[in-house]
Image 1: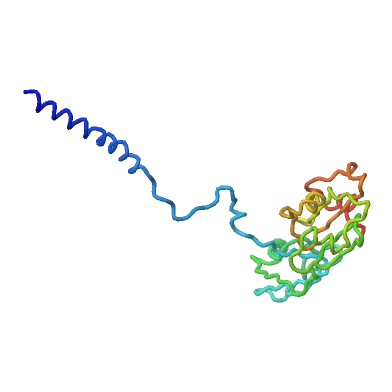
Image 2 (image 1 turned 30 degrees about the horizontal axis):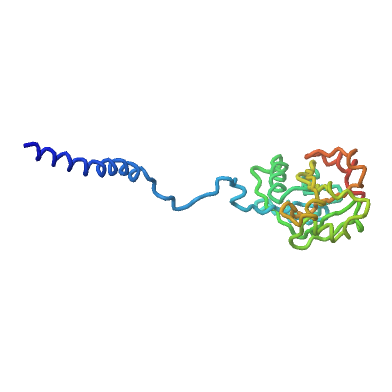
Length: 241
């Protein structure tokens, strides 16, 4: 009389593991998210993801064309003087060296606002000085060199004839003028870069950059800030030409 119950028990034992397994697998399958269609590297900043070309900055000797569509009597072609100033019509001299053309336009709009109501001004480069870099200090041929195409610091030093035997290879300084009144600095261990052959940290030279190779033994007496006033830089460690 107990055989039917025994058969039922055996049947339940056979089915139960499968039911448990199905119950455990179902939530995992339901919770699995869909694969994303696109991915953005988490370790990149917006600036790294989008390449932003550097704007040209005005230097001494550049020729600017100033146009006033609604006040043509103020139209002018001006040259950036050795002191960095231009002489527009009707206003005082304006310092523009180190500015981009949009920055020059903004400065002109502000200056002309005392003469004109809501002035509209366009600024364009009519003629500009060839881009250059300066290499000085303990290099074979210190001087000012025309910058052609893409050039790195190690290549620029090669153009300047390479290091003298008195050079401090491990402490080369790259100076870059970031505004009319300020210059930034970056210390480079060229000795390590060249010895390892890994030039991933070899920065690209920008127009107007200054590369200084100090003398071995004097580097420890040098105090260089990451950002310095232009006048102080010129007086203490700037190029002598």
